[in-house]
Amino acid sequence: MSLPIALTCGEPAGVGPEISFKAWRDLRGDLPFFVIGDPAHFAGIGPLEEITHPSQARKAMASGLPILPQSFKAPATAGTANLANAQGVIDVIACAVDLVQQGHASAVCTNPINKQVLKEGAAFAHPGHTEFLAELGGVKNSVMMLMAPELRVVPVTIHIPLDQVATILTPVLLRDTILTANHALIRDFNLQSPRIAVAGLNPHAGEGGTMGGQENAMIIPLLDELRSEGLNIRGPLPADTMFHARARATYDVAICMYHDQALIPIKTVNFAAGVNVTLGLPFIRTSPDHGTAFDIAGKGIADATSLIEALKAARNMANQRAAYDSQHN
Image (cartoon, rainbow, N blue to C red; front, side):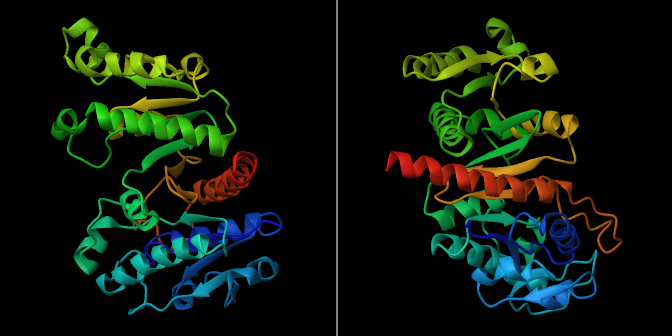
């Protein structure tokens, strides 16, 4: 019997509480999970079942959304963040990771946070979830992957200004990102030889150096090196021809040089069902691929599809990793 998934509450003034209940209604007969948060922030949305330990989540799913209580300093008003709750949001993430590392939960799934609120309310020192989870997991580098049934994408650089991309994009960073993605697709997705497509940085992948030199100077030599090491890799490819249906059928993951090069295509192809996955961690972490949506919070209209898909992905990845590790350890 698999362990339940630990779901963080995220920003309590956002859509997290609402989509958590919607996910529970959809998955309660199939996939056990529990949310960590303040029960007062979830009151009035749907039936709650307070638990004291993750082992109680499966039974509690039958009658309500299982919640492992975590106290927060202030009430939550839908659509209006309270800076006093920022530290509570951070503590919930750390709690979820701790429960997985102790063997009480199978994976972490995170509801959306608001990074500005965390910075202003609790001096949050990380660009986002991905970097904070790397610190909690004790790893230097973690990799963001966005996935939907039609596409997987990995941005090499993430939450930085566009004018800094060419500086931060180094051979070491690109190599580490590709190797992390390749290993994760083998270990967590059961792909024996992942087909990797790498986008160029510049228009037309530099067009032989006439539109930028990074492809010739860095990307092409690195990809040649990785191919010699046995990776199934193509590129650098022009990003404007990589994402139509016929092109997508030729690879398992697209490595992209910067944030929007990766996220625009996947959110265009399937906005509702996108899932954010952090690769390279010692535990499984997924998240819905959207924000806190303060503008619709509390109105009962938030779409829970992405969270539901994130919970399913967390279960599938945790099961696959366990099977892989049992065969290779």
